[in-house]
Amino acid sequence: MKKPQPFHPDIEDVVPADVFAALGDPIRLGILVSLADCEEVDKARCGAFTELASPSLLSYHFAKLREAGITRSRAEGTVRFLSIRREEFERRFPGLLDSVIETARRDPSVPRVKLDV
Amino acid sequence: MKKPQPFHPDIEDVVPADVFAALGDPIRLGILVSLADCEEVDKARCGAFTELASPSLLSYHFAKLREAGITRSRAEGTVRFLSIRREEFERRFPGLLDSVIETARRDPSVPRVKLDV
DNA sequence: CCCATGATTCAACGATCATTGAAATAGCAG
DNA sequence: CTGCTATTTCAATGATCGTTGAATCATGGG
Image (cartoon, rainbow over all chains, first blue to last red; front, side, top):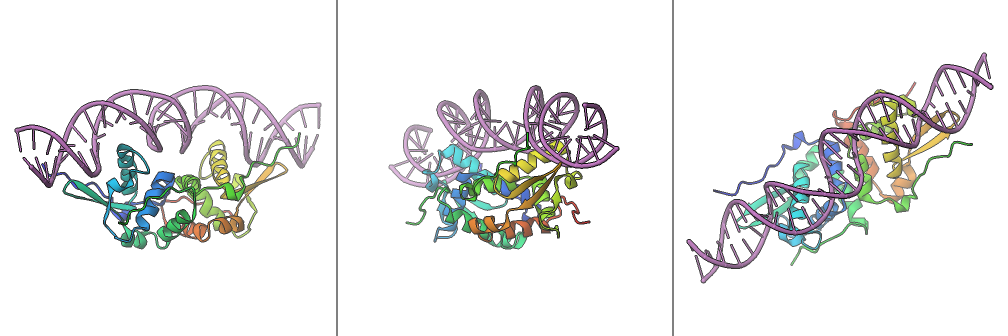
């Protein structure tokens, strides 16, 4: 059986309160800024975030971000790649993601991971 | 005994994850955009929000917004006035509040109240 | 002083959350 | 097929959340 690609909500179904709820956790903000700071777009493995939390907890947080329409997760072989749904999200909530990322990036309370080689 | 003015966190102690958590509820977003759309700045009574929820539930949500550093609450006689901590918040998280409010304002899922006379 | 008004506090509830560790799954390499 | 690696799922936990309704408190007006 093929491993199914995970569920991604239609961006139009995403609602502001759910987005903010998903952002309301330091680990998830850490995942987001780490992704945003990653040069190699769409090349961030899930396994690269282990400094932030245990694998199973990461999986939980990945799902939260994904279900809030913020990130996309693509299975490729045994690995999963994570990326931000930039263009779609920008269309849906213009300007929001940029200031969220800027805010999180500036703040030392948000944990980080270096994703680039 | 004088009714004590409620607790407001030092804006420097406010952390992004807590801000987003506070924004992660439709009623609280509704309070925020209603405040933002109010012409008479600093003149919004707590009691003007009863369309959004019961008094006790409103009180709960007011506290969440206040403790996240987003709003200010000033007791004056038997009435309490609510306002957004605009300047302070803008200094602490430049640009964030504007795009949050714009996002919430644009979205029909966020309930609203008409505060002006 | 008593009462009405505006608002908060409290106790309770079920629901969801973040976290853990163990088990399951899928693909790849031998 | 066998095992190895990357990741998710599941079951269980305690904590926090959103909501309700009753009780409380503070203030101003009669």
